[in-house]
Length: 397
Image (cartoon, rainbow, N blue to C red; front, side):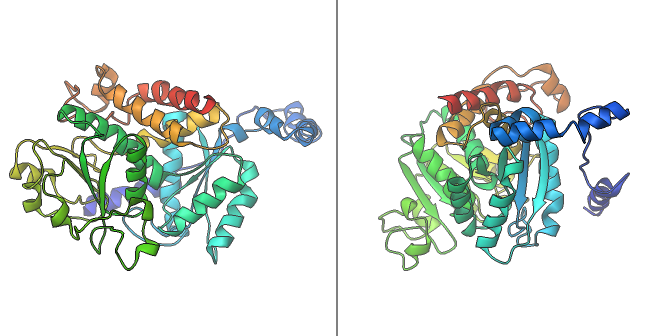
C-alpha cells in the first residue's frame, strides 16, 4: 500500500501536475489564423449565436463539452473532504469521458455557502456546456440539487453516483438472474444502504419490473411506521413487520450492498434462497468478500465494486456512453428510458463473444458469459458503438 501511495502521488505530480490540459482544436500558426481565431473573425460566430442560440452547437464546442461538478461532500469513500480535495477525482472523471467517448470536460469544484448558492452557481455557468455531470455530492441534498437543476436547465443533468450506478446494477442483475434461472419480476431483493445510490438503483429496478424490494439502512428496515419516515425514501418504504437485515435476508434471491465494509454477516448468506445473487458494492472493502461468501455456499453469483474481483460494477461502463448518446441526440435531459436503454445494451453486450482486443487488454486467454463474467469490461471498444446509439435512439423516441 505504501508503494501504491507513492506511485499515485507521482502519477498526479509528474511530469506536470494534474491529469488535464486544454489544447486548441484549430490551427493558429499564422497572422491569418489569428484573425480567424480571435478578432476580427471571431465576431462572425458571435453574431450568429446572438441571432440563434442553437448556433452555439455549430460554432463552439458546447455540444461536446460536459461539466463535471462537485461540492466535495461525498468523495469516493473519503467523505466530506471539501471541494478542492475533490479535484483529483473530477479530473479523473474527465479523463474517462475523453478516453472512452471523446467528450471534453471542464472539472468544476464549487465551494458554496448553501445548497441554494451551489444551485445558482451551476445555473449561471450552464450556458457553457452541453451537459452537467454531478459527482460526489452527499445525500440528501444531492436529490434536491439534481431535481432543481433538471427543472431549470435545458441540457442533460445527471448525478452519476445515483443513476450511473443504477444503470450498471440493473444491467448486471438482469444477466446474473438469467444465469441463476430467475427473473426480475419474481426476485426477492434486499438493499443494504438507502442513500443516493441505493435509492436510485431500487427505483430503476422497479421501473424495469422488480416487484419485491426491501430497503435497509443503519437503523433497520425502511418501513412505513418509522418515526423518521419523513426523511426517508417514502416511495421505497414497505408496510412490514420486519425490522432488521436478519429479518429480511431469509429466502431472499438478491442482496445489493451499497453501504460499508463487512456489513453482511456470513451467516445471513446461508439463509438466502437457492442460487442467490450478491452484489457487495462498498469500496474499497465490500460488504462481504467473495472468498467469505463462497465459503458459505457454492451456488452464489457475485459482483463487487473492485477491479481485482470478477464482475466489477464500474460506472465507467455507463456515464461516457450515456452522455455521448445524449449529446449526439442533443437531448434536453437524460430520461429513465435512456437509462434503461443503456442498461439493456450493456446486458446484451456481455452475452456476446468477447473480441481478442479485450482479452489482450486484460491479459486473458478466454472470457465468456457466465458466473465470472456477466458485465462488460471497461476497455471493451464495442461499448461506444452499442450503448451510445441505444441511448441516442431512446432520446429521439
